[in-house]
Length: 549
Image (cartoon, rainbow, N blue to C red; front, side, top):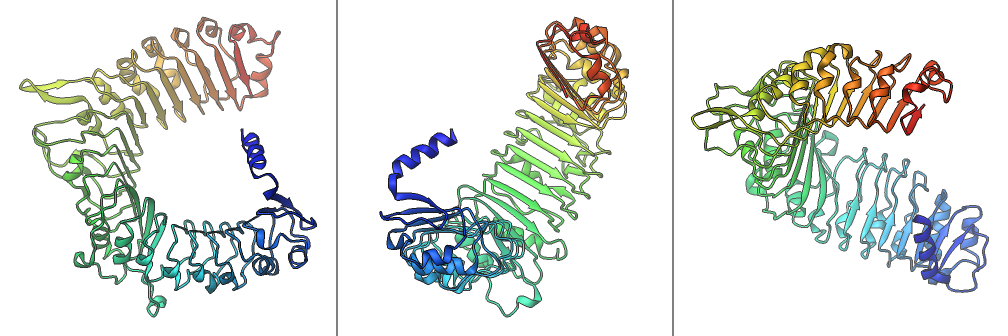
């Protein structure tokens, strides 16, 4: 497909687009030039062979020296698009003001570029400036705000940038800015830097996502200085430097004030509580917020929230501080919930619970490395108040990823589930899951078991998995479990790095199995499965698709 599109583009462009190795002599006008060799480039552009005033686009597939770039700028003043990605060294010639018609400038992926020429700020027709992955770039021009027609400023993954220049709010057409820095290091005291009030103004036009890096320090945030924004679709990624935590609460509150974010990710937050969140939020991710002690009750009432992730919140013991009431809304739209590496988490509520609501629309649940969590899931997923007493109800959960046997069994002990896919990992004794697996046997169709022990302890549990069509075993260093012959609906079986020595005769009973995949297999098992005289070949010869690597 790519080749077809490329060929179509060439036919449409006809003679106006050319490749060159800087040795061609073009008699006709060339509008778009792709340079795939820099040998003699500077000399060629200064000769009579270069395309001259007709050239509108210059793309490169080679490295450029400072002299090469100088030659192109000096010879092609009518350029509209100039691609220098992956191609330049530490510096650029300060002559970009000659390219008055330039609309697109790509300097991305130039790891050694430290400073931008001041003349770039004079490109008043520039609409797109790409600096993605210029990892050594230390600052933008102080006159960046003079790029009045700029639509896209891509400075994502520019890890050496120290600050944003002042006046960014003057870029009224800017709609893509993936990163904004609010740093206040001592060595930057004398520099006029972009402030939070300018960021708030930009929110009126920005879309996509923005990462806000903030070290708090001595920055003074005030709601009175915040302009109201009407942002409709933006993901806020707020990465706070953990060394200065005293201003985090006011900083995050200021960023969220009056802004209608749809997605929010916060890392390294140093506050003990979260500010009020916009009701439009559809996705929330909280990671490594060491001082945070609990999640506010209002979060469970966000009507549009579909994805909620908690990771490494080391001081959170309960998701909600107070118990719910029968009239309260409880995560009405939540579809995906991830809780990871929360070593102190004990449960959902700190207070005694009379009314226990449920996640009515949850489709995906992942719980990992929450060793103290013993009852959260069973309460929140399996019960609701009805008819004067606690009753079990069906749940809509479709996918479950978990490494806690207590939670797993409690989840299925009381409910009638419809879980389609279960992923089990890092469980010391799979035999402890027999109760839960037997309860969900009629619904589960896909089962993944990885890095677990005690596979042989499941015993007759396999008889309960009537609907299982796919089974994957990863790093389970045992023979295939007894009882596998009962998986009469099994269609796909994958064995990854399981160090099997042989395949049992029971494989013959898996008449629905059409694909067997074994990766990182030992030479011994490959030899035993060899067609037609391998010792285990009779056990698998009925399987149409065999992949043994």
